[in-house]
Image 1 (cartoon, rainbow, N blue to C red):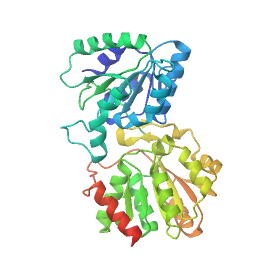
Image 2: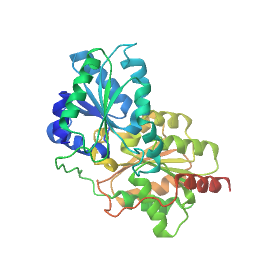
Image 3: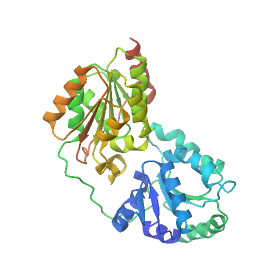
Length: 372
C-alpha cells in the first residue's frame, strides 16, 4: 500500500510518534510533507509521551490524532492508554500506527521475538481494535477497516493499524544529516582504547553493533560489554545498577541521544546517587539513526546542562577526537561521576554486522567477568 493512500484513508491532521524502521515510509512522508511543524507532526521522546501529547491535541481541537511507533513501544503506552485514553476514564480516541517487528514466522532480532508474539494480544488487552496491513492488503480493505474504526473513535475508543514488514511503499527520499564531523564507530574505538578492561554497557542499536565489531577486530573478548538489545533508554540505568553494586569497578555507559531523551529521568537518579565509578557518555548525532535518521530534539537541548542540573559533578561536550581523548582520560582518572556528550555525524558502514553471540551468551559472559 502506498503510504500516502494510508494517510489519506485515516484523514488525520496531526501525527506524533517515535520513529521505526518498519514505518520508514511513513516517517519519511511526514518529514517530507510537514518536517517537524508542531501543528502537524511532532517526534516525541517516548511512546507514552506521544500518547499524552495526542490526548492534549484532542482536548484542544476535538480532532483525532495519530500516534506512530514500533511495537516495542506498546509497553510505554499501557499506562496512558489504560488510565487516560480508556473509555472508562476520559474516552479520548487515538489512531495508533504500529510497526510489527518480530511477527511470528518472520525472522528478526532477539529483542523483537517475544514482543512480536504479544503485539496483537497487548492491543486486545488494552481494548484497542486492530487491523493488520500487509503487502497484499488492498486499499478497499484498509478503507473498510477505517470506516469500522470511525464508530469506535466516535465513542471514545482507540484503534490501531499494525504494519507488517514491507507493507508501506512509495517512501519519499529524505536526506538526514547534521554538521558534525566525528563518526560514531571511531568514537567508540577511542572509548574502548581508554576503558581498557573496564565493563561497558552500550545502548541499543548501531552503537552496540559497532562495539561488538570493534572487539572482534581487536581480537578482544566480548566479556567486557553488556550489549543492550531492545529496552531503549535504559542502558544508563543498567550501568547505574552495575556501578552501585560493583563499587570498586569503573563502569562505562555508551548511550545515544534518542535513548537518553526517551527516559531522561534516569539521569536525575544517577545524579542523585553520584556513583564515583560511573562514566556516562552520550553520543549525540541528533537523530534516531538506527531506525532511519529522523531527528531528535537533542539538537536544541543542552545535554551537559541537563546532566549538571541532575547533579553530575563533571559534565562536558566535545566535538573533536583530541578533546574526546583528553576528556575520556580525565574521566577515567578522576574517580567521580562524569558525563561526556560527544557531538557526532549521522552515518554508519554499509556492511555493519550484528553480534554473532546470543543475548543470553552476552549476559553470561558479562556476569562471569564481573563476578570473576
